[in-house]
Image (cartoon, rainbow, N blue to C red; front, side):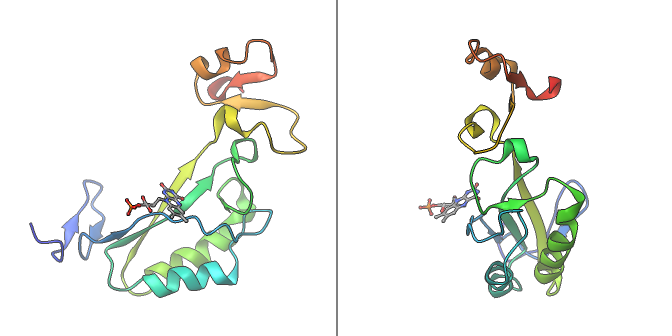
Length: 139
Ligand SMILES: Cc1cc2nc3c(=O)[nH]c(=O)nc-3n(C[C@H](O)[C@H](O)[C@H](O)COP(=O)(O)O)c2cc1C
């Protein structure tokens, strides 16, 4: 195996080599989860030679947001920002992957939240005294 050789994923997506940039949260997105100019610059500086770049962990719902100023992928309002990011990364043939997350029960510290969800039922059981915790699939 040579890391510089092209590689095809089971999905059929072809990477020009096996070099992938690990996800790095830069915490410079807006409060609403759209990327900043600095973040576009950050990715533009890294694309080109790599097979793919894994975009930093991105929250899939507001309730699942675990920290501020991260990338959002939770509603249609994020599409424009993510589309620009994908094009920034892909312009030189590097593939763009997106790391998604839901913070589950540990998002409770965020202000203004009225209900909380956990990713699994076992997590929900940790908060029996707090009946506002619900398993994600039942929320
Ligand atoms: C500032 C910073 C942000 C990071 N953000 C993420 C992230 O969003 N998602 C993730 O899975 N790992 C994240 N990581 C971990 C990196 O992807 C990588 O695994 C780690 O830096 C490797 O460290 P090492 O080279 O010392 O083993 C982050 C690391 C740093 C330093």
